Amino acid sequence: MGRGKIEIKRIENSSNRQVTFAKRRAGLVKKAREIGVLCDAEVGVVIFSSAGKLYDFWTPKTTFAFAVRLPRILEKYQTNSGKILWDEKHKSISAEIDRVKKENDNMQIELRHMKGEDVNSLQPKELIAIEEALTNGQTNLRDKMMDHWKMHRRNEKMLEEEHKLL
Image 1 (cartoon, one colour):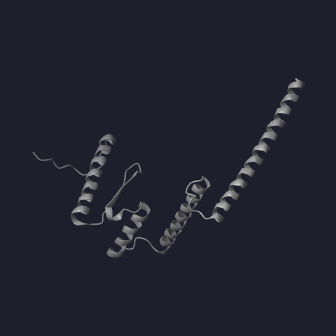
Image 2 (cartoon, helix red, strand yellow; image 1 turned 90 degrees about the horizontal axis):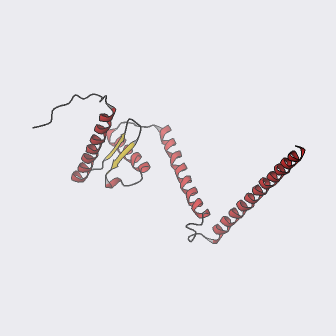
Image 3 (spheres, helix red, strand yellow; image 1 turned 120 degrees about the vertical axis):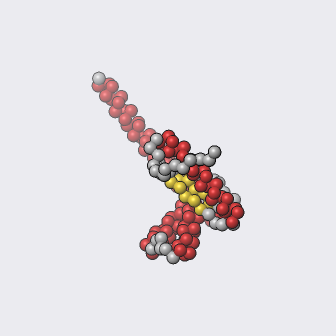
């Protein structure tokens, strides 16, 4: 016996809606995987749940990071369809995002170096700069600790004086 047709409308029961979403999402991703393998096609699927959670699938040809895959596929779509998805303003924003990402990556590398990780590949000049930065940080930290200690001592003396007055 086959399945009956269902009316395509919003499922009112939230529990049933969530189960249907999960099953249909899995089915859609399975079909995307199959068409990618069987037809050697480049496939990307992006799904947002009603709660705003992102689900994505990409064929092995597009195994780059998500931030690289999506713009590449959208660019390909725009080129082949002739439809304009974004203008020059959006391209400049995209370039700014790429610049900030690169800056973030560089800062992550610098942070790892400050933690003492991945320092074998550094040149002596770079190591000296890191040593100076760490020394300056240590000096600043020591100064702040001394300031806090002095303030603590002052407060302690004030409390002792108040205690004597009482």
